Amino acid sequence: METMVRMGELAISDAPGDVLVSLGLGSCIGLALVDKRAGVAGLAHIVLPATSGTPKPEAMNKFADHAVPALVDGMVERGASRVFLQASLVGGASMFAGAGLEVGQRNATAVREAGGAEGVPAA
Image (cartoon, rainbow, N blue to C red; front, side, top):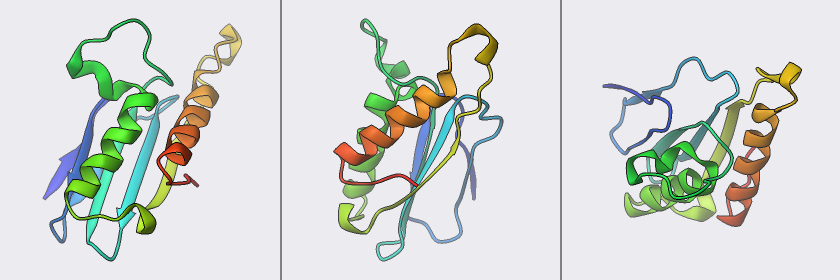
């Protein structure tokens, strides 16, 4: 089965052969986590580094400070172990460099920091 993970979404699978996919990341971050021993994988499509104000509950996974812990916790609930989680981070392009926003770099930094706080260093 193939699961498309769109902006602000995350998905977790423990079914052999499942494929988690995210396209068109740009300045967004695709964070993939895997625990090979438990056979659990997860993917989050993170849009922004941190929440501001009070976002709607359905929008929380757009933000690194919420999506990373939610992904890790969800994987642990499915049988993964924090000790064995391996992380890969992709995306974070400088899409708006001319505007001085550096959203991609800020996203990458926020995901790495949130992963570290969860005990899962992101490569």
